Amino acid sequence: DAGVTQSPTHLIKTRGQHVTLRCSPISGHKSVSWYQQVLGQGPQFIFQYYEKEERGRGNFPDRFSARQFPNYSSELNVNALLLGDSALYLCASSPITGSTGELFFGEGSRLTVL
Amino acid sequence: GENVEQHPSTLSVQEGDSAVIKCTYSDSASNYFPWYKQELGKRPQLIIDIRSNVGEKKDQRIAVTLNKTAKHFSLHITETQPEDSAVYFCAGPNNAGNMLTFGGGTRLMVKP
Image 1: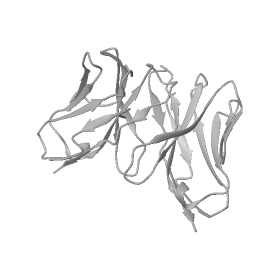
Image 2 (image 1 turned 30 degrees about the horizontal axis):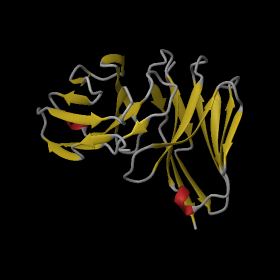
Image 3 (image 1 turned 60 degrees about the vertical axis):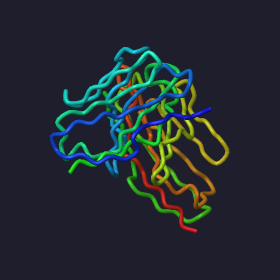
């Protein structure tokens, strides 16, 4: 079975642009979470979606938004990019919502903002 | 009630020695404590987890202990091998229970 897949794997943007990152969860998983990992730090929670509804939001500005589609795939959108948005964006899927089960991470999308 | 603090940030051991990484948490209602391993350029992967109804869990060379009174949990790796070199993250639920908060990570280097 395929694991969590993310696209694109790498991308370069300039300040002020927007970006859309995509994630396909493991088949049968209904929960998708997004994390931002700055180099040398732990993943920081951005969003969790379950059954197409937002179930949690981390301490990120409104420039960050996400959605989950009927097939449980998800998109993370970031508007008005700042240099500080440069990071590895990790998507994780889980069969359950909440925080008491294993998260299965994708390889991530590495965003560089110039 | 969402902070998870992890120590040390870097740890260097000789092959065959043991390694211990400790995390503290603030939310007394937390009941699930996983540990993830992230090799260079790879995704984080769960290596072991523990729930609050047990004090210790072992899986071959790795073990996790939980002290709910002191609000800390630790990862123990025995007989370390070079392939154990990676960054290890602890995590815990926030008080709303809707997300995992990760520690800052420990870079473990096992010298052959």
